[in-house]
Length: 210
Image (cartoon, rainbow, N blue to C red; front, side, top):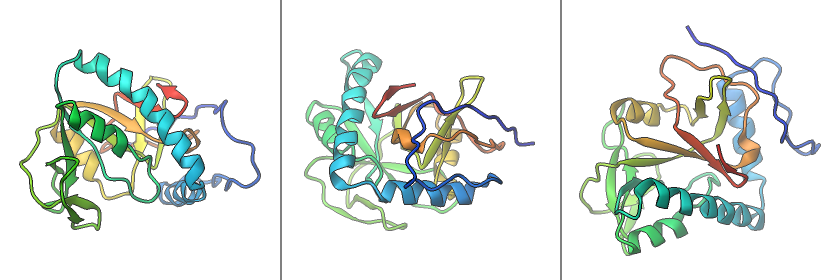
């Protein structure tokens, strides 16, 4: 049975421009609200937030890999998701292997294809750009874009995605370290977790690491 939790949001914006959360919580309603809120951000504001997220991720990744080379699952940003491509360029040039997600079979976990700064890209099955060639990367760490996120009283970090279940299936199949990536405004006061929801190890926003 799904579990529910409530967490006060001390950092929630009081701006009248932000859509109000629905009284009756539903994934689809929250998904639409948060995507609309994210799309409203200007390029300048998003660019500033992206730079701050990257500044938090750099030292975190150094500590996690202890100056060793790693295999990192990234993503190509869509729908105004945080853009980590400058960081992926840095990591690839430093010798890390970056894999981008590929939907090769519906209802199956994602495959990660080796990406390099010079990789040619083409739209994949869902229209998300993927490398046109490259070997599979068996990732040790996965950077997961979040439509929304919430942290429960038990400390578990939950992710609201686009509803396709691709990352849930991937996380269930690949027991690697996971970092959710989102803007702080995407934090949810409430998240009704289901049996299929796989918690993330941590969340990084422009405000820091949690």
